[in-house]
Amino acid sequence: MVGDRPLASEDRSAAALYVPALLAGLVAAIAGGVAWGLIVKSTDYEIGFAAAGIGFLTAFAILKATRGSRGVPFQAIAIVCALLGILIGKYLAFAWLVEESINKQAGPAADVNVPIFSGDTISLFRHNLDLVFDWIDLLWVGFAVYTAWRTLQPEEPKPVETQPEAERPVA
Image 1 (spheres, rainbow, N blue to C red):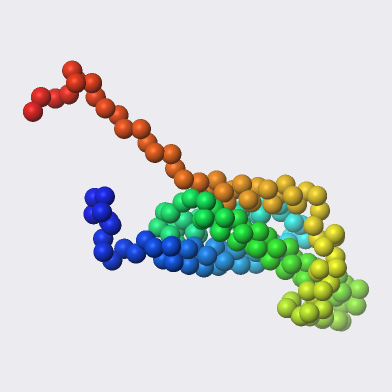
Image 2: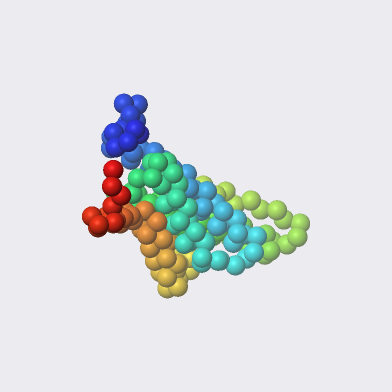
């Protein structure tokens, strides 16, 4: 950008902004969801603040991918991606905890691997949503949505300070 004019090579069309925003948001959501699932797997504790972290991560990735673009369309993309990241994290945590539970019941000699992307695991997850999601999850999802929304909120224009004529330097 030169002054107030964009360079000819800078494409600020909708496709040039929304596609990178969506891709960056999806990558951030997947990374955040996997990280959250791994945290639950390693600690046996679901840290709810990770949901807000996923909201921030998706919004920040979108902000960087669009070179600072903000506004309602980007906020909506960030929120949808953050919700997807939370769902991924919950699903992975569920699958890994089911695997751990089966291995505990089968004994130390058994090493059962629960396939993460099998139809049976997905079906088991869907049938146990009441165990996976609790009322407190609404709080964490709310934090994630708020964080994604707030991070990409348009900035208020800064007021231009004018000097009174008496204080202006004489040219």
